[in-house]
Image 1 (cartoon, rainbow, N blue to C red):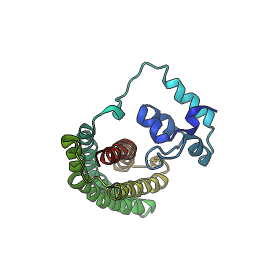
Image 2: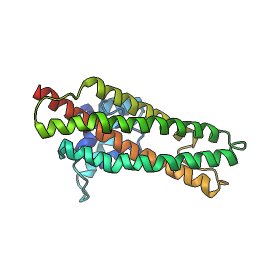
Image 3: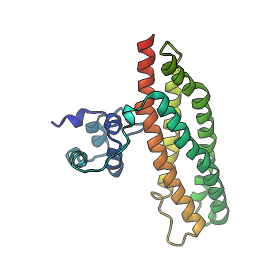
Length: 231
């Protein structure tokens, strides 16, 4: 049996983010479900694990490169998350809400699923804005202090568990939206605003997957490990 079968999917992606595209193409969750082994993840989705392994192995023979986020220092990673993914979320959520409201108002009678999408986008906006604030005001400063002072701090399991639960909630909302949008595919008669909404929703989901992966599978475990070592 290939060793990859027993490896958690989150670890696979942490070691080489290029593998995320392979897993995503097979509908395998490497973010919130990052703790599952590849074998179990494939089994739950009825995916041929050997086919996935072959695709993952093929990546080793390409000349393409990707950031090795797993080797980044924790303080640098927190800055990267805040400056890139957090800023992206803050930029995109108001735009998503604007288009969701507009498209629902104009086309909601014809396509009632748009009304549900609007409500889910509003729910996502409220949850994510509170989540970002919690990370930036509570967790990230604690991680930076651990790294800077190299002494005991207060990065606790309970804080991380709460943030992971919020990641799960955001992922579930986006999964509902993906289903309602037929995989972010607008109908043939969709207007430009309709298409922009679906395109932006897909872009937001793609960014969220990477955002959650970097925190759930790299930042949080390493911060907790450092906390335990120093204490």
